[in-house]
Image (cartoon, rainbow, N blue to C red):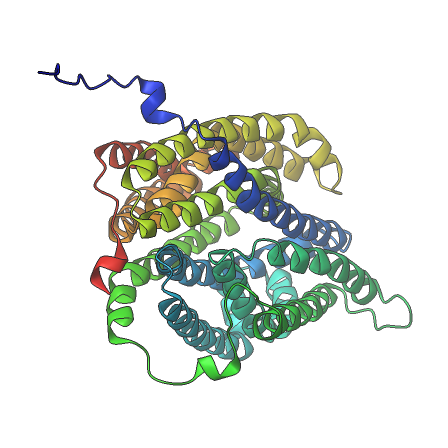
Length: 466
């Protein structure tokens, strides 16, 4: 009689660190293009702020507040693509290409409707929108000129952004990088031409920045959909696939799994805009500081966004293949990578802060506010990284979208907004501590997501319901 087999005891390294080199190679292949894409996009934004900043602090602040309103639409599109990518990645992992096409079509419908609503609201009420963010008459007038052109950008940018993200779940990894590279060159060139009136073009000032952005977004749209309809080998998608009835089972899965990210990101960004309103009423110095701080943060955390996208796609595909043990181990590895990425990002921000501030023509008050906010961001970066990779990557890719929706809404509306309002407008705290109050949710969600990860209740396979 053979002796009973003794189950080998796993160490923490076995449970938390993926040893398969193919995993890290896949993280690299999926995440690196996204990281470069993010770096390029933020590089464009940095150049925009530098060129607009040459027009004066009021122009810089006005464009920052106008873009904060546009950011509401941008994050809503990320919510649409985030929810759709959960389904698309899991369906792709299960080789259910029919459902993948259904998800893509529904996403285009939703993004087109959202673009129409935002475009109409912006065209009709741009001055009123700026009046929400600031009571400075000059900034309202400048922002109004900027938004009147931006109204035409919504459709081209939103639909192409969502389709690039969705195609990534089907293995189209480098399209977004190519599109962003074109955007980098075209945006800087056309901004320079129309802001300062070069090569015979009219000198449009702050409106020229919006014109340059519009042209680059039209080029992005043409390349993205040209590739989708004519060059995508991974999955054949034609204009005919935009027509016909949507599958009832897919619609049910989208409502259960895909809608929470849309609601979550939409309401979270409304809250984020309220935080911008708070900062907007603290003066031009703080508004300029926020614009520079956020642009710097996004540039220095490009790797983290790549990691976030890689974790969402890879976790979703593994769940679709039914590989639960690998999902649990790899998700914990992503947590450790997010900690390392956050620490690295914090160090980078701390090191480059003086150089970044020196790029701008700022008053002493604005320079001091910017340095304080950059210092706060460098300390909070590890929490920003962990909550981003866990909530927007691993747990969302696992289908745990409803839990994340409630977490986002509770911490934004129950913690960030009240504490930011009190610190900034009632207690008169310094920009450093106001910025910390505005980011308290990142600390809380980091620990909450870690608890959720360890419990293992976040893995939900949408293929089991369709």
